[in-house]
Amino acid sequence: MIMDHMGAILKTGIEQAADGIMLTDVSGVIHYVNAAFERMSGYGRGEVVGHHVRLLKSGQHDAAFYRALWATVCDGRVWSGVFVNRRRDGRLYEDHTVISPVRGDAGAVTAYLAVKRDVTVERQAERRLRQAQRLDAIGRLAGGVAHDFNNALMTIMGHAEMLEHRLGRAADTPEEIAEIKGACDRAAVLTRQLLAFGRRQVRDLTIVDVNRAVLGLEKMLRRLLGDDIRLTIVPRSRPALARFELGQLEQIVMALAARAREAMPGGGTFTVTVGDVESLPPNGDLASALDAMAGGTVVRVADTGVVVDRDALDRIFEPFPTSPCQPWESGLALATAHALVVQSGGHISVRSVPGDGTVFTISVPPPAAQDAPAAASVRQSRSLSGSETVLLAEDENGVRELVRAGLVRLGYKVIDAPDGATALERAAAQAGRIDLLITDVVMPGMSARELTERLLTLHPKAKVIYMSGYSDAAIEGQGIPERGAVFLQKPFTPETLARRVREVLG
Image 1 (tube, rainbow, N blue to C red):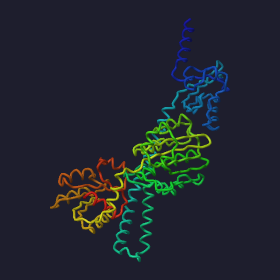
Image 2 (cartoon, rainbow, N blue to C red):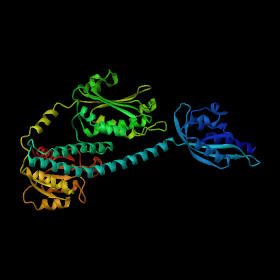
Image 3 (cartoon, one colour):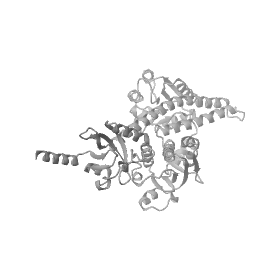
Image 4 (cartoon, helix red, strand yellow):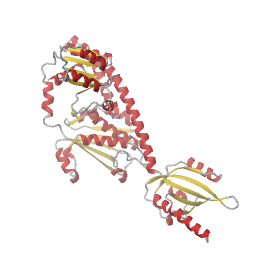
């Protein structure tokens, strides 16, 4: 009587257990599953009892995986590991399983008992963490390399421009100087693209020609996509102007290219097309958004890769939408691309159809009416010279000397220092006022923020320009407010510096 009662409790406990429980014979035919297994797999017990466990196979494990499993349990030992199995509805899930041999009275193995815990969420979290750590490491490396490279590149660019100015702009100006400047411009573009790929460039909204921006990415895209993916770029027939950050636009296209490469492991076609907002087909859901972007630009990015299933498509712009069934892990990149488009006042959508592949449509508004006069007023500035006093803090000797020489040539009085502490000492010793502080964002010792705050207590009317060849992450780490701050992205030429200085001082 007691045994019957305990047996009933045991049966009820197994049936109500949180973990899935499966009992099979020695050949792998299922004899029993509990309710937790039904919830985990989506199969009713009547659909699996009498069937072999291969019913759950997902194709994610190779033959060696199963050989090792069967070798372990057939030897009478306990096996534990993680399965990627397929639910009844076709979706994949992951479960941590412990398989124990069940022995009869004679000691021979007569069955196997599997206890299964759904770890899909936990495993996805682990993958997200690893992915975030990889991206952070890559971004830090890209930012550090670009920072040092930008400093060296800026020195080359600046001295080439100063040499050209010294020799004059006569027809007999050495052709070698033009070649140096051209090579520097191309190198600066590559550096900016590297920072964009690592999502670490400084934000600098400006008026860009989307045609030129996309065409300028061709070499980088070919390297990223590889030889087995055919690249096609179709620009708009006329300039496609938008108020956007060039680096962010490049970042978005490259993020979609990286996703496409992972979706086309066997090769395919990647196409970027620039068009008009008015060319989009009527869409009730987007009607109001598209009306607000009248005259804007559309960038269509299409690939012929693996079609995204409906469930994944609905979550494609979430930060971590990846699952074991997806052939690529680009959630962070896509989420970032989505955020950049939305922040600019644009819209991004995606369509994935068997036979057609996947198409991302990015719509961005045209420049505001007030943007053109502002840009023109800077270009029409008659003189870049000045007589104000500038405090310059820069730890890179070549860059500091270049900036100092360029400003002195234009008539400015420059007090330069290799770090923040020295800059403050020299500012305190200055009899007259300091009109402008130009400081590198990341310097040893005193931060640019502290330097700025302490200088403004001595010279409250001083204006500030921050220079950086580093990342926006580095800038945020220094605590510098982005709004209202004036940035100069390295590398820049003496002429660019002069224009920005005159713009800030008025």
